[in-house]
Image (cartoon, rainbow, N blue to C red; front, side, top):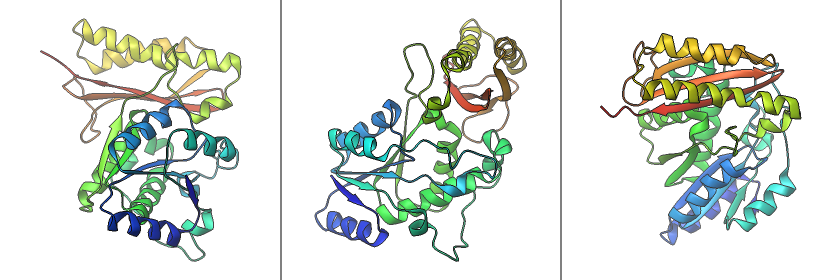
Length: 283
């Protein structure tokens, strides 16, 4: 695996790959890799001739009071993992490389970026779209892989790709969970054993909603009320939001429809976790 830090060097590699007619898969990450990331990487290795994984903790997607400085960094460990997984290139630029002095240009997907997590994290998706578009321009991938755990992020990026006529295909893969149901996240490393146990309340509330839907419940208000009961029953949990929305446009739904997204964000003490489920109605 070749490690690349400079944009010009990454572009040189891409030109060489293109001259050989090779397809390129890109997996953007912020490092501290876990099985969720690895599911994306393995899919890229399987589907593309060459796989590029980026590790870049993007400062523009963190708010002033968020955990940019504390965000887990495990570069040496990550490099070992990527080598074992057969990744061809690691693109790991410094912040100054991606955002040089005088940088002024940002990308927004209006409306979509202001819902769900966007309300709690103003500017977050502006930062995400900007860095991902930069990565698409630098790496020129045929396919880029993202996880469903960040469902809103995937929806926002798909809209950006559509609106800007980008040729990259975005592929979204299922959430990877621990055996007890907790969705894998780099932020799980912040949790104490007690908080880790409390965090299971997120998947429990989603499972309860799914169970109600399987029994015929379609009213969003009833589903949200039940989820709140479960979440409020955990003393360490504080709800940020629970929403039931149309997966195509993130508009709130009063009734469950085919391809509905149920998403939530919950603080376990100081750690903000997200989770979701996509509902497919077969009637």
